[in-house]
Amino acid sequence: MEQNIVIKFVLFTFIMVLTCCSAANIFCVFPTASYSHQQPMLALSHALAAKGHNLTVITANPNKVPMKNHREIDMNFLYRLFQEDIEKVEKETGFTSQKRQGLFNLIKSGPAVSEYIAYHIFNSLQIQNLIREVNGTNYDLMIVEPFIISSLLGFSDMIGNPPIVGISTILSMSAIDIEYGNPVIPSYIAETFGFYSDHMSLWERFINLWIVLYQNLYITNMYMRPSQEKIMRQYFGNVNRNLWDLESNKSLLIVSGDLSTSYPKPLQPNTVYVGPMHIKTPPPSLPKDLQELMDSAEDGIIYFSLGSNMKGKSVPEEKREAFLKAFKQFPKTTVLWKWEANTDLPGRPDNVVTRKWLPQQSILAHPKTKVFISQVGLQSFQEAVYYGVPILGIPMFGDQDFNAKTLSNAGAGLKVEFQDINYDKVYENLKQLLTNTSYKKSMMRLSSITKDKPMSAVDTAVWWVEYVLRHKGAPHLKPAALDLTWYQYYMVDIFVILMFVILMTLLTIYFIAIIVIRKLFSTKINSKKIKRN
Image (cartoon, rainbow, N blue to C red; front, side):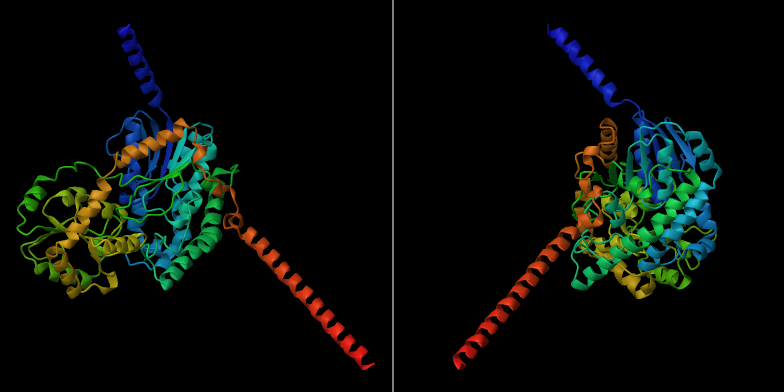
């Protein structure tokens, strides 16, 4: 009897495992040519492939070694486009990743940048072949990077209109939140491309509101979405749904962030913050020469990298000299500088070591790394938080101002404006970070927050993707807010009716009062006439 129970239990477990792990065909669209953005998205697709799902992945960072179940459409040429034609891109779009970008110029250039990238993607032989290949096929799920090249959502119509999951590698901005029905409340939810925290002054709230309105009512609705809609129909033909329907009917949004690098805000059940998916634990081993160099650093390491987009060689000469002069004041501290040029860094002191490429996570994980000089992109910010390394932040564009503000508010680092960089500022900031232990303590507090989760970020994301698969798109997660017009959502129609009722009531009272007053006045006059007579 007991043996039969055991056999039944084993069979039941086996069937459940087979059911839970049934392979799905998944179509992934990860077009952004930014290594830091590609890392979290590919971490998810690799994990899904490892679980037996079959993936077709449009990516700018294909694997050097082919991976089972993970077919890649190579869009690596997009890196060359932005690295070799920097001046052309800036001339045509108004954007460059090699200079400090003002907020409104960044937002304003968004539609032109998206259109520029989209046309290069769609005109590529890889995508033209893929469109012909997948037309009429059926996929079980589509995973997309939201907002930037939304015209690529047209693939949905060709592959059987599967459920769509979005994956954001920046903290969810208002334009993305609107697509998922998340509340956009500018009084305390700072725009991700803005400058503020969750505690804003009257003036800051006014500016934050203006940023949200400018981004969504003007740029997105009048330029970005119409432009991408036009491109979608140009390359996919008569798509059944318009772009807003495709954007707002996604099943789930996975955000590669958590409360260690952001602030609390209300979210719908279709939005999940999972944490930094790209962090590898343990990190890869350092190359032997770098390991020996870091181990022997007498007073520790300063690591200097402005990310995968901004190049160290793009820093103007006078600002490079300010850094080099400041580094000389810490002769026993070794500086690792990501320097992409083929020539040596001019004026480099003995304690500064340059490399074209440096294994960032492994460097930050080393116990002798004391300070990270960074542009404060989200992935770099998350890595520094995870390994507890204080940051000297130099924001350049995008979400970096928001991240730098979050960093400094948490007491886990300092911020310096790019245009304000000089020897005194660099030296004083580095001195503070190297000698004041409060920054390290604050960063370790953030580190404990990001690590305190029931599952890893990737495992959590995989669970939610499979949840959408199990529940056929999980329509029960979709909030009714997405079915309302803007005036219904904000109850403008109700306020208009209430104002009309109040106005009519006041007018009625006014006219009744006039009639009564006239009646009384008339009666009084008549009584006086009677008395005289």
